[in-house]
Image (cartoon, rainbow, N blue to C red):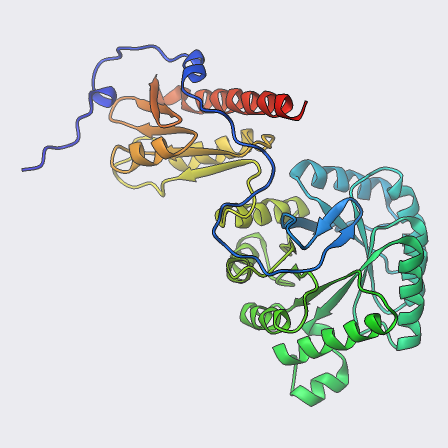
Length: 402
């Protein structure tokens, strides 16, 4: 007959005091903070494209992008948002350029950030030329509305002159009319045909510094379009589910669609498009990548869904821990577990973990029991231990680089 769980470190009287110094004896040699996956996913082989100092494609990590929702001519607001995105970990930032006053704003914004900037151009090819002169790193053009090969020639010439890449941004909502008629709507095949048509325009002008996106608000339509295009070209792909929705619904749609593609090795850079603060796009993107072990950056929090056995407010604790550890860049896994069923096992597998018991919680460091803590002290202890571990990793990495 099985005995009920009664590990005395949870139920017994307090026999040891918690100390952060215990961390020193339990931490293995820290891993490199270089983004490497170990995911087992074989990524599609693509050519390399530069967007400023970021390499997209080849063996480079999948980069994370977002787009400012400020008016580009409002320099202060845009720069403030860029700095928030940079703090969140955003690696490439896109700005809308609908008119000449936005181009004027670009020139000032360029002085305030070294993060690669992409100019989002629609309809007026002259804005692409002016954006190139203003110092952006990439031009995003839409083959459905740039209106003619002679205008493409001018855009390509500017990209060559300034050493810029071009993103061909196919969108199901703005496909060329003749393709809609030919394919009976914005089908995956129509999207791919639009992209191939525009690739042909660039290649005809000996331009290959190109990346491609094929976005729709329909998840499976997007997935099918990227799969089809992956069979036809080796240019790097910018992934996204466009107009995906609010923070909640958009995160789900993007996780499903981008997760499918990424798990198949398709994708070189990505944006999670949300009707929310752009920093949330960055956070969700990294969570998707971390879940597939394609990027290792920042804290990965594992938490139980809670149930009637739990005496800790896991929801509140997890939210507070994530918020207070958002500044950590080192790849550290933290487990917040509410009870003694799966708690000890999950906590042991994490870098730092806590498992709730009947009277106190047990802290784990690198798989080893590292002391008991009162429920009221769990958050502070976890934060302190993770910060200590991050500092140790950072110091080790500095030694390796010197």
